[in-house]
Image (cartoon, rainbow over all chains, first blue to last red; front, side):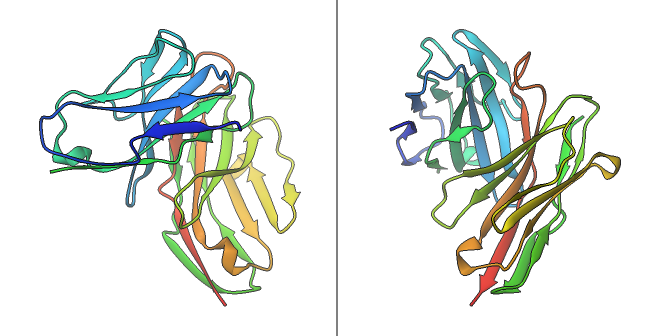
Length: 112
Length: 117
């Protein structure tokens, strides 16, 4: 089954404790992206990647890092999480020339 | 800068009513793509449609229809004969060129639609 998976789905952590949210897709897609969703703000793009080792900043990259060492994986790293990074995070992927982004199920992160 | 405005924060209708969700966008690109996504209460994001900037034809898919007008920078979404299952948050989104350069996507704030039985 074609899908984008994210782990963990729920995470509660404390300020400053490094964490990684994994994202993996099995569709051989070139493009992958991370978004955060906050009430009243819709989805805002954090980082995106056009292919292996090619990444670029979205609109809200501060406080986040990403890497794309393999085509299927695009982890989101929070080196020193802060409470303002409490949010719902979505990973997405899309093939070259494809119509739609395929979204993962979301990761709800709470930073205390 | 690119921007997507969904001025309607919440809409409430009674089942079988028609409802239109508005989307107004801003971009300096001549080639761009517009999308609608649905987010039901379960939280997943469901792709509904993509429209490129060169194709102003309206589209109909069952009870859903989309009206793209470049002259007013709008890409409105109409649900005909709404049903309770249509209750969701609907997002309009704008993306720059899909195949070259980038994958930057801007989403609107979303419109929450309540359909009452």
